[in-house]
Amino acid sequence: MGTRLLVALGISGLVLGVVPAAPATATGAGLSAVAVSTWQTDASVLGLAVAKGKAYVGGRFLTVRPPGAAAGTHETSRTYLAAFSQSTGALDAGMNHVLNGIVWAVVASADGSRVYIGGDFTRVDGQVRNRIAAFNTATGALVAAIAPQVSYRVKALAIGGSSLYFGGSFGIVNGVTRNRAAAISTVTGALLPWNPNADNDVYAIDAADDNSKVYLGGTFAKIGGTSHWAVASVNNSTGAPLRFAAASAVPSPSSGCTSRVKDIETSGSRVYFANAGDGWGCFDGTWAADVATGNLVWKSTCLGATEAITMVNGWLFKGSHAHSCPGAFSDGSGTHFLLLQNPANGSLGPWFPNTNAGPPTSVGPLVSATGGSDLWIGGDFTKVNGAGQQGLTRFTNLGAGAAPSAPASPTLSRPAIGQVKATVQASLDNDDIRLTYRLLRGTTVVAVTRVSSAFWSRPTVTLTDATAPTRTTQNYRIEVSDGSHAVRSGYSTVTVR
Image 1 (tube, one colour):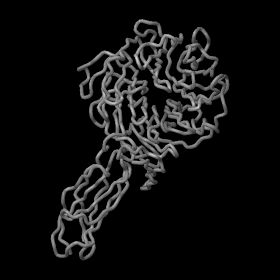
Image 2 (cartoon, one colour):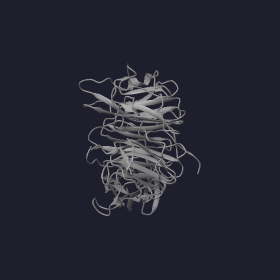
Image 3 (cartoon, helix red, strand yellow):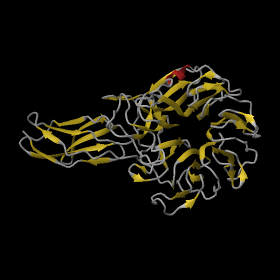
Image 4 (spheres, helix red, strand yellow):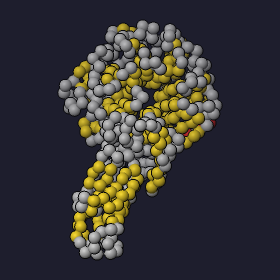
């Protein structure tokens, strides 16, 4: 099939803009909301990258286990780093290294030939690797040239051109002062002049797709000695701050609110940011800026810290613990750890799987990555869509997606002679918003309509049989379809006037 366009849908605050979506799935989201089989970890996943048919995963874990296995059973040792098949989710036996500390970040080179990790470790397989290491994805071997001496934690990694940019809590690299942000050559491993000089921790870093500039996020108040709260755009070779008007999206800290940038995703002409705030009502949402101008494009003010964002199939997927989103759902509908947004305006799209939140952070999803047409998610969750699955999960664009919920038996009325009206609450579908409803008299379809619904807006669906046989008793039921699945209600009975 060719590329589809999702047209604008409006119902009770539910709005979707026109966004291209991948054609390989029957879902409106371009990804199924049904998680596919994947191995698990015994503790949080903090870093993810997909390259050359494998997902590289770093975190706090010490063991991994097959899908469906309970915690503490069928475990295989993997100290803070593992790799899994992109196609099957199974453990990759060849990527088996012993690290002595947590991995906080993972990034792959543009050609997929290398994967870089950053964290707290100082040894890999007994060899000195102070908080940064690289592996050859073809062989799994350590890359000898990548061995900078970083004085403390590396929390974020990004590649732009032949530079590996990294951020964290460190102050010295190779004996040279580099406050919380630095860069090395991916060719020689040498320290580069790039020096943003942040005055506090850097949590997120990414380079524009054309490497024209680099973006930083964290808890810093100054870059290069000038005021830049929590976010900055900097020169790609010197680290000097650049004009970035969109930074006004992040509120200045106050006694009741401290909002920090936790993740950054560049995609073409746009750059997207994820924020987490301390304090009730503090900015927890996402926002987008224009790479060329630095101007703000949109700002979404959902509440519930956003930890991870990834662009897949024309949608911006986000991991957060959203409990309220203005214009969509409010407090009382639960916590929605996985959502997607229209990258054109930030409005929510048709994808509603979910996780829970487990120890130690009780946040849920913490990191995400894509291999192009899939989405890998890591964090501190122990369940996905209500089923046991710890630390790691994935979604693909294969299969028919989630099925609609079964409708209740319709409520019937007789508005006129020869007419029967059927009403039912709209069904929900975790990866489609617009569903088709058919009214069946016995086995005959007598009316059809299409209605949009989401968990925050479930309208009443009305269908009318205008040709019902008079003075007869008839049985009616409702069928709901998303184009791939059809579910039916039970029958209701009425005597036609």
